[in-house]
Amino acid sequence: MSAYRKEQVLAEALTPVKKDPLRVVAAALIVAFGACLIAAIQFATQTDQKTTQRDYIQYWVIGQRLIHGADPYDVSAITQLEEQAGLGSSQPRISLSPPAVLLPMLPLGLMSPRAGYTLWWLAIMGCLSVALWLLWRLNGRPDSRIHLFGYAFAPAIVCLISGQLSIFLLLGIVFFLSLLKKRPALAGATLLPCMLKPHLFLVFAFVLLLWIVARKAWRVLSGFIAALAVSCAIPLLFDAHVWQQYFSMMTSIRIMHVFIPTFGMVLRFIIDRNAVGLQFLPAVLGCVWGAWYFRAHRGDWDWMRHGPLLLLVSDVCAPYGYFTDECILLPFILAGLYHSTRLQRSILVLAAINVAALIEVFSDVNIISPWYLWSVPAWFTWYLYSTRNRISTAA
Image (cartoon, rainbow, N blue to C red; front, side, top):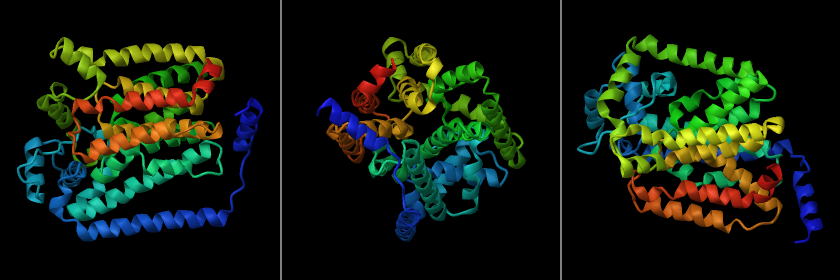
């Protein structure tokens, strides 16, 4: 393709497209109807015992315990409750979510496992749909359906099947990117879901703090602190000792001694299994890189442009995480997709990576298997390839 043609294609892609409001509403209604239909089918075919085989059950147990004022982190009580629901002799599922983010699980305490799973699935599906719609808007509302790839993104599919809450984290990040310029305090508050798994955002959070100090964006920080304070207070209304119980549970289960497929964990297991600090070395190096990256682009810093790469590096350097957590990478996946289609580049490599990941998942490879180490570097490599011109220009 000639340079002139590339510029013409790029200009056409960046031209805002007027959308018929009726078509947008009709499309939203079709998606909502499809989601409700799937949820109804699931409710009709699910049993309480089947729901115990999904990650969702750990959130249902927390809701059940907390809504009745009981310790939501009592491992023996959790195991007993899951067995009563039909888990049998399988490994119990224990949630490590801190008390600050237990609010979404409270409604589950009023429902049976099957009814709760239906509501939980609808909530996850709704979060994914809203996130994709917002990402489409953030990328200039192109006249394409590229953002629908999010429904086929392997980590997102696994979250929908298993009931994993990582999609809540994705929505929080996307809301932050959407609201930052006009409503910074609200943008800071929408980062609260990231507290579900803060270890995934160490580099991102470090650079965000540097940006807040450099730009004096205190409203972003105050919005987050206010949301965190409210979220911390609500569980205390049901269980005054919930924080002590959380730290007691984290001490007793020795989570850091279980192998999780991250590069920090691999480094630690190769050098010294007892040296837990080695697990955080990639995150420390990532923060050093993040400080350099922010300094290099401080003058023209744009969270929509530079933020996705920070998310990716945060995931690569995370000391703890699973394949399902990679759904937070959708902002940079779609950014690369849009950039590739504007320049008429092939997206077959991304499709191959996604298919390979789906094959691995549906082949019942254990989620903590080292065979999942390849996925994040694969997404990372594809992103650098698909946006190579833009990255080199920015540098």
